[in-house]
Amino acid sequence: MRQYSGFGTAEESNERFRFLLEHGQTGLSVALDLPTQIGLDPSDPMARPEIGKVGVSLSNLAEMELLFDNIDLGKVSTSFTINGTAAIIYAMYLACADNKGIPRSKLTGTTQNDILKEYVARGTWIFPVRPSMRLIADTVFYSNDNTPRFNPISIAGAHARDAGCTAAEEIAYTLANAIAYVDELLRRGGNANHFAQRLSFFFYVHMDVFEEIAKFRAARRIWAHTMKERYGVTEPKAQVFRFGVVCGGSSLVAPQPYNNVIRVSIEALAAVLGGAQSIFTCAYDEPFQIPTESSAELALRTQQILAYESGIARTVDPLGGSYFVEWLTDQMEDQIVEIMQEVERYGGAVRGIEDGWLQLRIALRAHQRKKDIDSGARPIVGLNCFTHVEQVEAPGEYFVHDPEVSKRILEKLGAVKDRRSNAAVEVALRRLHEAAIRDDENLIPYLIECCHAYVTVGEMIQCLRRLWGDFKEPVRL
Image (cartoon, rainbow, N blue to C red; front, top):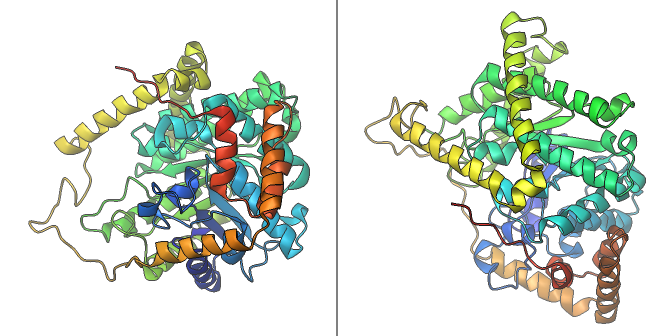
């Protein structure tokens, strides 16, 4: 199990990592701030209001080196919540390990690196779909050969679920995206028996306990069947549905915030019973602020109480053989397969995204969910039922954002640019540009070279954007 930490400057996030490592954390999960996610350097005027607010600002290798200062990358598993710039952040992590003298073969962790769900549900895309798929394939192939213990992609249904999908739609759209990635990797000459061993998945857990358990059980069946029957995969490890989860998300609400502690506990229980390999528990105050150290510690303790006191993890499948769970799993599997077939009939996930068809389906579902909450048809305690006359309920402590964060990050960026070799920057960017022109060239070695030269994320993105352009979201009425 692992617990998220990280926001603001790299130094602040490093301090928080140390706090949680001292309190029993077993891995690190790094969310990147919005400018880094969409390929903007802190110096970009569009980035200024968002620097370091929803995650860590990592604009260049120097920041990565500060983030992991005195942390042995060979002994921790690091998960990066990043998509549009995932290939760059992965390259930066490898460059950081190189400078620490840590063999790449010892690195463990995950990059989310699922751009299709960004087009579908979240919005931090950069390039059009096809070149984005190339970057993902490059990352998978390079990682398979050079960082064999690293998960180069975590195909995520979480954001589609929080955007409004049902449990069945969350799994169906995620598996449809996974099929698109497998098809792309095969088109590029990959061997599914090899690359599929490092494919992983990521979901949210919501409050209907048995529905959540059934969706994970059904997903395992469908994925194993898909890999075996559709792709002829014979390696058992390449048929395994490995997934991590977030307990919390849109299921948490700001009114009566301490109720969220109970919600997260119930969702974490469902995740364990559903067979999750990795669990992240949200802090109760996340609906309205960046978690404090005490709320983050409580979220971590929630996992630890379940793991060490409840006994639920002592049996591989404690609900196996339950009539209700087996029946519900069958029902869920039928629903998921039906939705996947709809996507297939349309032409697959990539076409559905490029046409805006999938985005429209999720938007309509989100509209219906909002209506259900507003009407009370979907009860949420403290929000639309069992409410107080006066709903304001202050948490134990508040997170206070340091207004000087942006200034410090900009000063560090300026210092990096002053001391780096401009000649090395120009050579690295030129080599990246030339490699990107060649469709069959893997770009990861060139991104690593850029990172070692302290080329910024924004500079690398601009180099590629000049070739590939930007994704234009289709309008459907």
